[in-house]
Image 1 (spheres, rainbow, N blue to C red):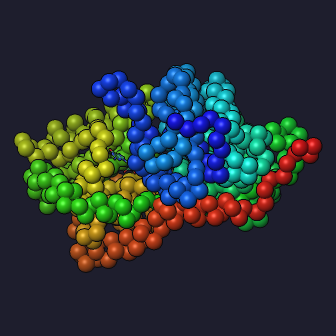
Image 2: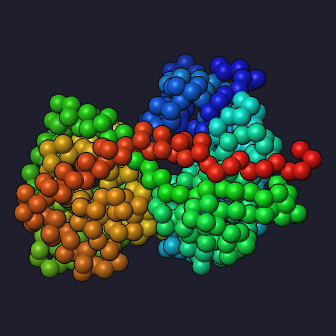
Length: 486
Ligand code: GDG
């Protein structure tokens, strides 16, 4: 248990706390820290600073008391009721913002009630955070679900140094401008001292949106806003920096896992149970319309039609982790993918050798590492993706310099992994060519490409990302000024 009155010098605020609820045989609830890139990154930052994490535990009803996670992090739960999960999380976050921020791949839904709930939940996050941050503390807010927190928190606690990091793309103003609450969202973010994005383009899109919609001025990465009488923070001028700080993974840790005998043996077992094909193609994604799974399946189906590939020599393993299953667009996508896979397998599989192994399940990390090792060609073909960690994880696992990565130009990762087989997933003919090239290219070429990508991933790992972010936040141009009279 963590005392309620305690305060911290570093506070992370994210939609989810990094824990999963576990109920033991006696019916007692335990919280297990769920491993993930963000947890690892924050862990390394907080171990030296003594930090707290504010977030939702993932189920509805009353929030548990604050508690200490496995890694010694202090966790402060925020409660969400069932209607709030529906309106704030599934609704405004994932059916309004997510599609707008991902090129409107599906149409966004606008509901005034969802917006009101988004505001109310952001306010609750800001209030809990204000209660745990020490005087002058650094607060790092994460992602699109919490874009109002910077200004709401600044209003409650002008002494704090506040940063926000955008894990997903920031859309061009032509798309962002569709949002009926566009000004409020920008004003919410301008409560921060530093705003971090995955790509320079995302930071540029944000700066342009501020200029066009709020009339701010900017010089390079630094935005100046005069404020407004009707703004939460009043008409005092504010200076905020917006720049790219691309996220990464704990490459060394993942490589170590991939090198364990158990994972290596499992990789061999996977290949054997697939019938020892010449080429294993692999896709690993949350089942999300941004990930380009349909385009990938279409390319594979055409390669089968063309007679370029055939099972059992070539097979595709597609892991599609269940995601946002109550949101209509995700239900529709699942229906479409189920149909496409059924059709491909009906046409091309034989007894004992499937054209596509489709796994709508989630797996432990060890199994993912084994799959990465077993795959000759990794297919990462999103239509739009902030970064895409899977691409980096695949590279980190290939200590043997084997394998090849086909990577969409529309991912943040493509800006770093230039030696991948880059593709435009909308161009099915081009995508097919890239897949065939990745399969058949000269092995020495492939090794060189993998080596170069590995250098990048290992020299820019998650710890370097967190350090770079916090340095940028500490050096942000100036603290937004307090309201006169404060
Ligand atoms: C958002 C942005 C950005 C997936 N299935 C399983 C599993 N995973 C892991 C992957 C990877 C993570 O989940 C997914 O990360 P991505 O980056 O690929 O995509 P999003 O979930 O959309 O993440 C994205 C990211 O935030 C970070 O800023 O890169 O652009 O959209 O780590 O390996 N892990 C396990 N079992 C699974 O079944 N253990």
